Length: 114
Image (tube, rainbow, N blue to C red; front, side, top):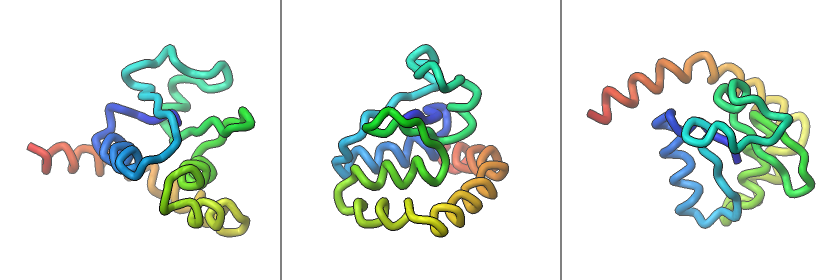
């Protein structure tokens, strides 16, 4: 999993998945920008959540969350359901609507954390 470690919301979410005992490996793109697959630029990795699947395929957005959930105990059922069209398309639309709001939520999160 490739995530923006400079985002406080992202760090909290990744911490949650780790506590759930997920079998995923997490890579903080902010802290380790050179630790990316050739097909993934730093800019793309910072802009969206990406996952490299067990078969080597790189996916992002809603599909990436579905893949993460599939390897997270207690969430596997949701991962299987979320990966099926048309639900994955609806979740991708929701994710795309969230992305422009994300910087504002990050600032709010930081202010509340002080």
